[in-house]
Every structure is written in C-alpha cells, then in structure tokens.
Image (tube, rainbow, N blue to C red; front, side):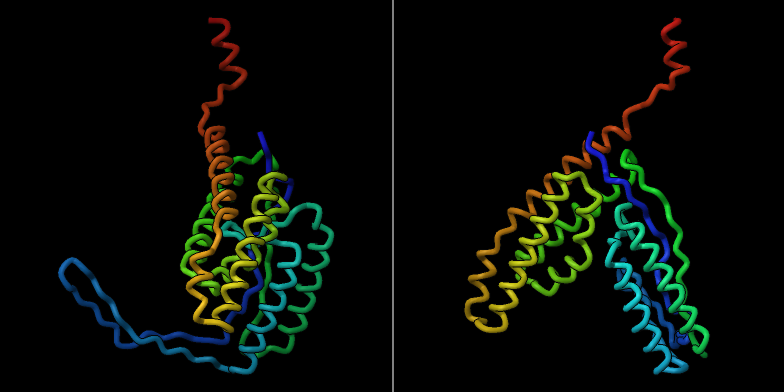
Length: 246
C-alpha cells in the first residue's frame, strides 16, 4: 500500500496575546417561528494600537518563515523530515526574535510553543485525515473556478503546495498539476476582469477543472483504500494461535 512520506506535525503557532479587550453590550434574543435569533454589540478596546499592530505584523512575518518549510493544515503545521534542519533553524530564530520583542512590549506579548508529533508513513489515520482535507480543497477549488471567483481560488491555494512533499509520488504529482492548473486559470480570470470585462464570462465558461477533478478522484480512491485498511479487523498473533489450535 502507498504510504505518506516521513514527516511531523507541529501543533502550536505564533500568536499575539493580550493588548485588546472585547466587551458585549445590549444582548438581545428572540424567536421567529422555528428559528432562534441572537444579536449583540461588540466593543473592542486596543490599549496601544501601534504596539498591537506591530505585534500582529511581526506574527504574520514569523508565520511566513514557518511557511517556507511547513504546510498549514486543519491538524497543524506539517513538515517533511527532509526540511527538519531548516525548520529547527527557523524555530530558534523565531524564539529569539519573540524574546527580544517581548522584552520591550508593554501591553501585549508574542508566544510560540510548538509541540511536535511524528507521522509514520504507515499511519493510515493521518493519511485519511489529510485525504479528506485535500478532497474538500479540490471541491472548493472546482466550485470557485466554475464561479469565476479568482480571489477565492487564490485564497484556497495559499500555502497548499507543500502537501505534495509528504504524499506518495503519484498523488503528489496529481496535486501539483491541479494546483498549477487552478493558479494559471485564476490568473487568466483576474486578467480578463481587469482588462476586458466584456470577455470575462466567455473565459469563465471556458474554465477547465479536469486537473482538479482528476486529483480529487485520486484522493478519494486513496482515502477509500486507507479507510478499508483502518476498518479491517486485526487478529492478534495470540488469538490467531488459539484459533489454529482449535
């Protein structure tokens, strides 16, 4: 059976702590038929806007450094072992910069406490979880392309290329081709929207989602393959031996 390439998951990301306070005012609830509604006002107080915005900008910059070697997923940052040395360098640099920033900050702090978990190539549950995410990604890309929503396509493509580094070679190639196809078509849709709006609908109708659909099908097949392995009852050697004696 095809396996994921050895890698690890990092739980925890660069975050801004403090510096802002939210209060809820004038809460209101009411019923309309079978529907329940709730409404309120949210009041936000930023104690030092300059420092808070600086913290958010620093956070985003440090996260981009992690993105050099990691792919963001719903289960955490994923890094192939081949990039481990570079990842360690980035983590040490981030921690050092956060310490320097926190030493002078007054109203908010930056934090980064990564916890790492190894992904073994034969870990079917992780493989299944990743396949489900990639299937959803392909479905969302296909929908956005068919709508001509190039902004949403760009948003969906952000920091997804790294997934291909931990997938089996054939699935990694399928993913790269699908992402590149979506990226090129989003670029063309954006160009027409900017330069020739009259032709935008024609370009939209000509959108080709075949690469995305093929990748989705490959991920579905692999997810089914993995799920079948997970759900197959396993008989221990001890029980098998007892059964043999009977």
